[in-house]
Image 1: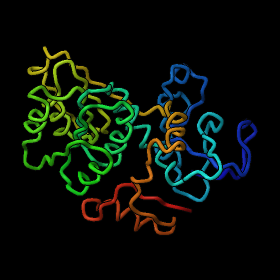
Image 2: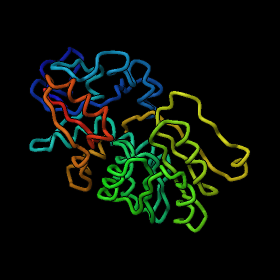
Image 3: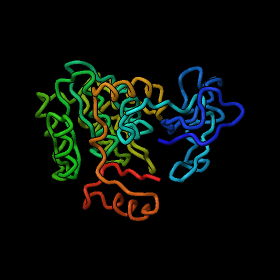
Length: 283
């Protein structure tokens, strides 16, 4: 979130003083990938903020492709809540819920009750699944998941999570398994709990190889999806938040000023102890 200080010669949709949401994905709107809705693979943008160029944790931020990468914020909006729309809410929704084809009456398991997994939990409820099962190692986050709408929670520390999911689904497994951690064990867990014909929707950022057990799954008619968020759903999500259909502000647990950023990172790095989910940093 920010207030426009000045604009470049090519910017026509915004003016100084406008309150805007800064998308985590920059889109030119013109290249082959943007025209296909794959903003994350924009040839001159994509995931560049905080990755290939300076990010947004600063007093001033330069935003490439501003006309197609910023979103105007109406007056009297809850700007803290809308911060969640810069990244985690569209990530959970697009990479998890949409790719996972969550549907009315379906069964869904989300592996990982961090901010991304909880964002998937919030937005999965748009489609009224029969069961929304949250799996994590942290009882504090599982408690939060129940408050946010999970029908059942499972602590996977016991090593019996797959059996517990099967017990909740009459031995079938789930229609959609959303991987929201990014480690080999959670990707394998998704394989263990997916029902025939189901979809494993991977959100997690994997830094090491993960096994795919085709010796078990080759005949199960499953699909596996991967995705870097494109933020194509941000305008729709803005409307759902403004109409109070969902409340992403409940993901915010801590608030700091910019000059406290070291403390903020320390709090977030010890989330298991501090209960941190999303940390707001205000300039």
